[in-house]
Length: 220
Image (cartoon, rainbow, N blue to C red; front, side, top):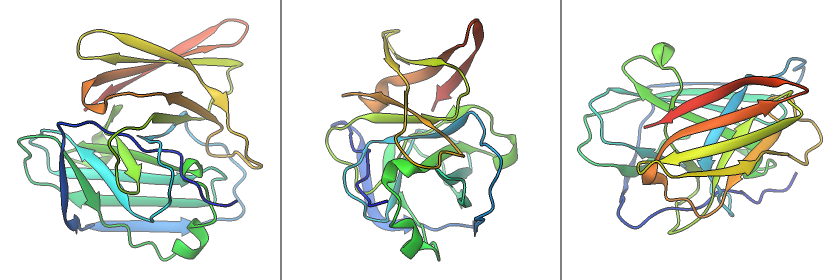
């Protein structure tokens, strides 16, 4: 598995924070090569980058919350990380680098960026945060790119919809990821040329022979 990250985009009126990365307060990671169970439905929401820099960025929205919670999962389920960061109130959206001091960096470089899903949320306690997501990126965010929603779904067909702050919507088919061992997640819903600051909600319509309940996520 050679690395060529698939997430990189951004817009013009978001501020960037390039000072020292936000330091983690809690960093738990492990490698388990005997994984036999599948993952949860949602794995990650991130920009579609093209180069792997081993740097992690998040779009921190305007907020008055105090905790950033990130879960990172490899597509094969072998690598897992849970990272917490303390936050100060933020008066405007900022794309900020956050500390990612993994002891497994030599192993992680063998994954493509699309094979390392980032699930980031903010709240007052990590355990109490529901489906309210924020956008992340492996590597330095660029002016424009695509948005990748990574999921695990047993449905025969998944259609992802995004809704912006003007009630406009866009939909894409979620396609199987071409990788050998998709345990944690197996489908990519890729939105082209999306402005992240306008996104308010994502819905995934799931179908077998009959409809499965739609999954819904609020974007902070």
